[in-house]
Amino acid sequence: MKSAIKVIKEQIDNFYLIRRLSIYELKSQNKNNYLGMSWEAINPAIQILIYWFVFSTLRSREPIDMNGIEIPFFSWLIAAFFLWIFFYQSTIQGSKSIYTRIKILSKMNFPMSVIPSFVIFSQFYVHVFMLLISIIVLHFTGFTISIYYIQLLYFVFAALCLLFAISLITSTLSTIVRDFHMLLNSVLRMMLYLSGVLWPLTLLSDHQTLMSLMKLNPLYYLIEGYRASLFGTEWYFITNWEYTLYFWGLVIIILILGSTLHVKFRRHFIDYL
Image (cartoon, rainbow, N blue to C red):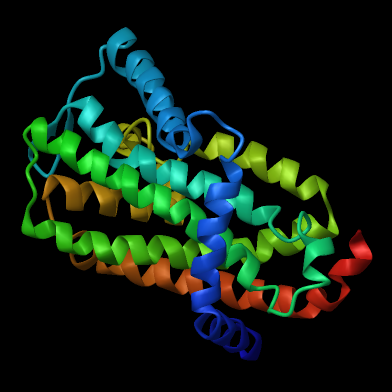
C-alpha cells in the first residue's frame, strides 16, 4: 500500500511534466510521416472498416439489442472499437516504455513511474479525438447526444486508472524479461475477440459459466459503459453497481501489485540493459 501511495504522489507532483512529455511523445512518433499525426486516425479507421465489412457485410450481422433498443452493428462496433484501440496501444506502448528509455532515464531527474503515464497520455489525446469523431458519426446515424454522456467522463477516468495500474506491472516485467512484451502482444490480440468488442457476449447465454468468466475481464466493463453512454440506454455504473465494485477492487489490487513491483525493481532497471 505504501508503494501505491508513493507512486500516486509521484504522478500528482509531476503532472505538468507528464503532459509536456506526452505531447512531445505524440509528435516524435509521427515526425517522419508525410501525413504526420493523421495516421493516428487513418489506421484505426481502416481497421474498423475491415471488421465492419467482415462481421456485418459478409456475415450479415443482425442489429444488436441493448435494453430493448436495436443498435445497427456498425454503430455498435464504433462505440467500443476506439476504446479497444486506446487500450491496446496504451498497454503495448506502456509495456515497453521503460526499457526503451533506460539510457535516457539514467541522465534524467524524475521518477520512473512517470514514464508509463506520459506514454498512456500520448495515446489518450488520440482517443479523445477519435471519441469525438465517433460521437459525430453516431449523431448522423440517429444516436444524438443525451444526458447519459455525462458518465463518459467516469468511464474515461476508469480506463486511465486501469491502464496505469496495468502498465506498472507490464513495464516492470518487460524490463526484466523481454519475452514478456511479445507474450503480452499475443494475449492482447486474442482479447480483441474475447472482450465483447466484435460480438456481444450475450450470444453465449446458453453457456452461462463461460459468459460469466469472460465478463471478469475489466475491459468488458469499460466497453459496456461506453456503449451505454453513447446510446443512452442506462446509467451503467449504477445499474451494475456490483460490477462497478468488482472493477475498482480489481484496479486497486493491480495498482498495489504493480506499484510494489515497480518500486522494488526500479533501482535495478539499469542492470537489465
